[in-house]
Amino acid sequence: MKTKSVIQGAAAVLLVMSSLVAGVSHAQSKPKVIIGYEDNGADPYMVSMAEHMFERHMNADVEYKMFSSGPAAMSALASNSLTFMCGIGVPPLVTAIAQGLPMTIVYNQERYTNAAGIVVTPKSGIHDVAGLQGKKIAIVAGSQASFELATFLAEAHVPYSSVTQINMAPPQMRTSWVTGAIDAAIVWDPVFSALRAAGGKTIKTDGDLPRSASSYNVCIANAEWAKAHPDLVRGFVAALDEGYQVTQSNRDRAIAEMARQTGVTVAVAQSELAGYELFSGADQTTPKVMGSGAGVTKSATYETLVNTAKVLKTIGRIQSVPSSFEVNVAPQYSQSLAH
Image (tube, rainbow, N blue to C red; front, top):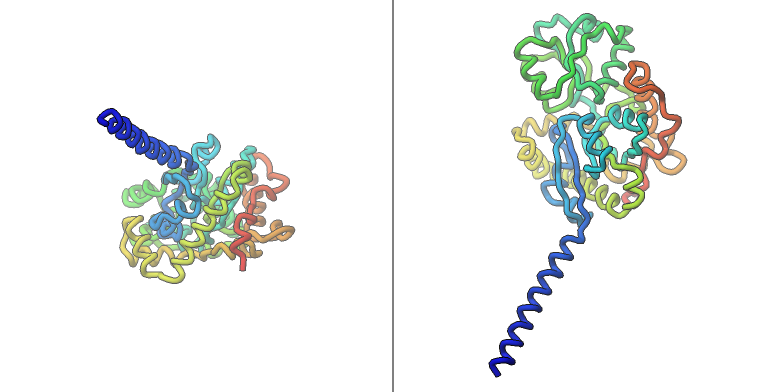
């Protein structure tokens, strides 16, 4: 009897161990997804992160990684150590595409209106874009700001080379502003709002750019990886859309979460969010965002890629304009969200 009890006990232990191993194996079978993002101020994807929407919609082991700028994230994407990147501007993406990297937009998050632009110091004596000639402006070289600055200078007939550009990350701009090392900055929230609060005068915002050559925050992935993992991409897009929906339906809850994640007050988060034209999952397949089918090449996102490439070539950031961007705009992953 004792031997039988021992055998039964051992069997029970083996059964429990087997269940545990099976559970670990099941947990390990979840795909690993690394989502990169920038600190662009308050944003609906922060709600998606805070409420674990990515984990739920993708059923994946999700990890988040913050980057100081778009160019800093591109090397991680190129080496496949990053699955998705959100909050990235169009110029770093166009530069990567021009270099042969197969990157694609899977979700266009928003269009900047007054959450980014050119702000000048009180002592600079600058009153408009023409006044930038001969002055020092802080910029994240290769970011959305390079395209914006070139566009604004061209409109004002100011030679691009006549403005001294000082490359630095947004957080450094605050210090340079205080020490007087710069006369102006072209940057996005939260630093854009911080410099205005410190007495800066805004001479241009991204809302002055046309929709077809505008400043967008987009989420991108390797096009080949996305094609091989469509269910994960659809889940990723669905999570972004859910964050947008909560932001629209329960603004107070959403902004409170954004404020917590960015470490700012609710009032600042509200101001930052107000500087965007936000896009839902259903918006993705409309002409004002990525379009659908044959309409993709006529969409605002596609035209912005083309116009950005032309500007980047003119200022020497890329050698040539890619012949097509059709594989780099992917509204198909949002098709199920279209109304």
